[in-house]
Image (tube, rainbow, N blue to C red; front, side, top):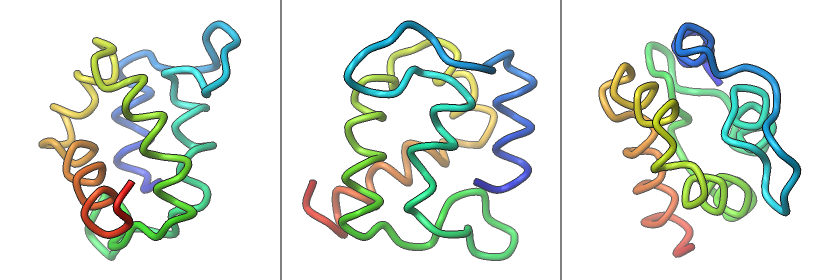
Length: 96
């Protein structure tokens, strides 16, 4: 995850993990965990340029769980919808 995205999450107060569940929590740490398989963003971007099956398999379920979380929504808004765009990319490229 690019520094800008991490900074936006941190400024929104999303740090550490939430309650235990089958999916990672809606947090900065969890977002970092789920995007580990997604590769580096393109230069000047905050989201990876592609979303292969491995990336989509971790990001898409997390996004479905967290997209309505107010903190995640605020971060997405502060990133001009980059997280939503990345989710759409994952669905489009991997079919998840």
